[in-house]
Length: 113
Length: 110
Image 1 (spheres, rainbow over the protein chains, first blue to last red):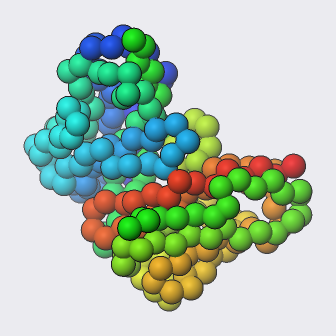
Image 2: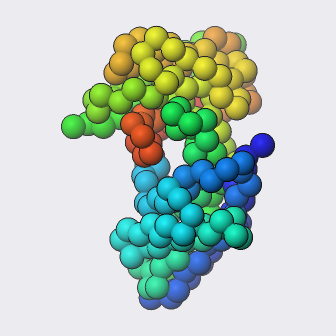
Image 3: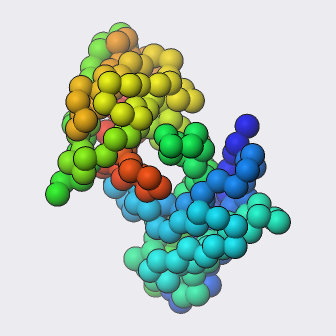
């Protein structure tokens, strides 16, 4: 069945460092891909998405490119801030119109000043 | 707009007790979902509702029931709580690609 694998955390970075969080997927066809972010004590929020191969999703300085040849959707940011500290989830959509999501296990990012 | 709201925020139950978690959305979305979040396991789908009047099982439905009361509300019921149901529960709604999540209910079963 479909699945999402993302790098385990926690990831600890200094402010202004470069961030990469790896995400790979297994799926039949070409599902839409997402990154969600969860700040402490809150629900998940959509960070960015890509709906077809070679699409690049971007938001708040974060980017991810849908790579069908490597079945990957890695999250990157050039310069992280303390306020980026959160848990990041990679997800894929399945089930057609029902828009169900399969989530990775999440990666905790801690940014130190 | 309040988005997706959930009640209660916190709950402690004894084994065997029952309770209902409430969820409501004000975005006129057709689809609604219940997830549980456990450490190291991400979010797992319990039940979902593609439209008013329909519900379907997700990945981990055992021990739960749901009701899609109307287009706005989707409740999750634990008939006989077990310690294995200790978790954080999230409700979400969606139209097309994006799911909108509520703030969660932290449930502890002792």
